[in-house]
Length: 147
Image (tube, rainbow, N blue to C red; front, side, top):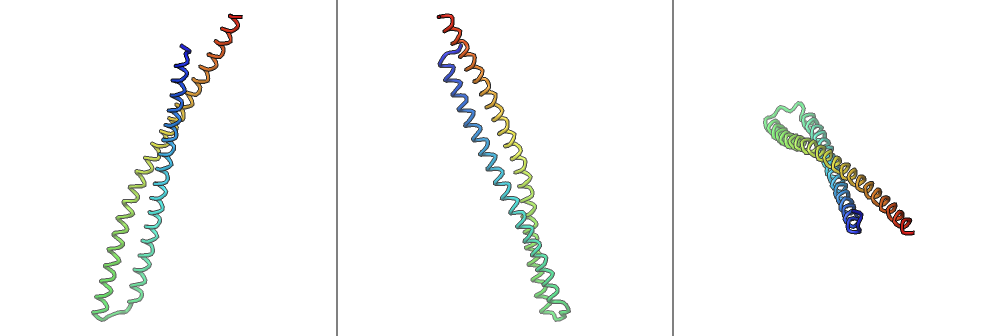
């Protein structure tokens, strides 16, 4: 039961658990980095929307009191272009919010996996320690009986 082969198997399992833990932690770090990047893109998009709104206000303020037809047509065309950009930014923001929600769920799963793998590694290390301790005690008993 306490053979050298069993000891090697236990060491192999411990190494495997360490590898799995490193993979789980690196996956968690990748998900967190992606989430941070999405949040930065969302902030940039919201800043662009605010800038676009101020540009629209400036456009209408600069053309205030305009009455000739050509100027009104140009104003309407510029306003339409700004509205198209605003719609594009709003769609981008909505997609980013969905992506962030998905990334938050992925982060939660990755964190749970990392914790689970760490817990399994700790259990295996505890079992290994107990096995080594019991093996050492058996060896001492065997030596005491032989003496």
